[in-house]
Length: 474
Image (spheres, rainbow, N blue to C red):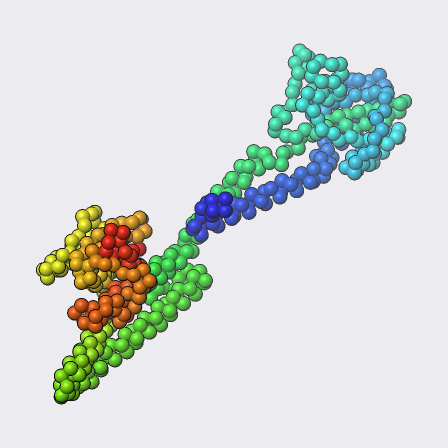
């Protein structure tokens, strides 16, 4: 369940902000609805004070100033779509009024200062779907109609019930001579979550989403540039100094990236110069040692010393060549990896090596072709040297990576020595001969080049025999 929710969580900053802001709007809307529901009594009191109370006071004064014979005529004059009134002799049922009802009753009593017959009462109750205003149901029971009939007997109905929550408010006012005036009014209250509320929420969410997307994209453009530059720098490309534009936080991150890039580049250049200088300076003493070794009388000792000096010289030459290659800056180009493998196979074929490229579709990749070709050449040399032949393949693994493979038919490597093969100057071949075992820099150089492209290189024994070297590049 958690994994599914994580997949639904947007990856982009704009999407996350939109989701969070819409959720905040929904929560605010829900809290507003709950607040309105909690203030229902106050809403009812405010609505009733507007019209129902005034109508009751007006009718009570008219009835008080006219003879009882006029009660029915005057009460029927106040019939409407929302209210009905009648005069009777039975007092309302005794019950304890709520705080809202008591407040309305007190307000009604103050306004009825000219009518001195007793204290009025107020009853607030829900209104049933089939209930009539002055008693009975729509089945045809006796009693005054909630919505009075017109002259032709047709019932005039109020607004549809689904539009509002209907509340019935009955105000009972005592009159002289034991009469009681009852005015019952329908008060419509808006639902907490109605069509207007939903439309308001949707429009607010749409406005927030549009503004968020536009603003975030504009403000994070420099952030996307910074991310692209970091990726390119991680692949070993030379990245120009970035402009410190955008928000203050992004500008600070850009300045930090520019400083980091400058320091790392300077550190790498100094390191390469140091190694190259050491390798170059070792040439003279090694040459002197070789000349002195020629004067050794014991032939076996002389040959052993000369072999050791030659090995040291080869290591110095390889190290110098490696540092010079690393120091060179090569531009990134769009290259067909399958074509690159074909060029390499042709070079080895001229030397009589068994190197073949497996057929496949063209695989385009932005890379530094000379460096990548050098890494691939080192893998092919190992395959030909230890596995008799090499089979190259290039393919696209998915939308985010490509794969280069070099297979051979050799004995493979022990599983616990795979990582050792990438260490500089480590040779898994038992002999000390540079012709058969090399000097142990080939795979180290290949891994360095591949990592500079942001990729990975691995070795694995094939089930059918032989070793597979696999390069995965982004």
